[in-house]
Image 1 (cartoon, rainbow, N blue to C red):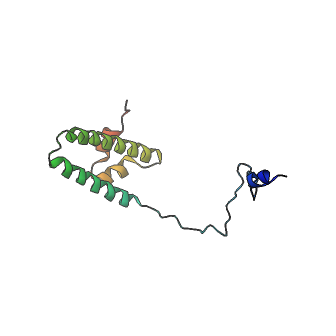
Image 2 (cartoon, one colour):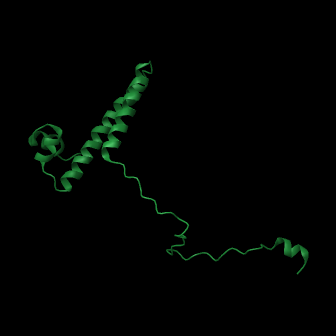
Image 3 (cartoon, rainbow, N blue to C red):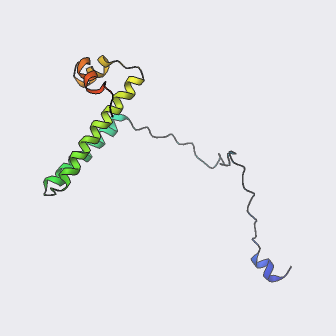
Length: 117
């Protein structure tokens, strides 16, 4: 082997690729960390802070963003509908859903019970 070949040859050849699906993590080097759970209350509080901040920015004179904020209201209505549909699919009654929202079961069913396009 020439000196040029010796210089171009890697000192430590890379290990062969691991087959798909095989766990190659060295568990002694990887700490077991508990995943932080974020509760729905935390998400709701964060969302409220964002909406209030957005309203303050619009109030300072960004009238064009007012239209965007009304679009957000439509998105929120759509998300509530999706949440109610999911709760119904999970077995919650209209009475349970209505009581959480402070409305009657009939009002909840009339608002979210029909088929949506």
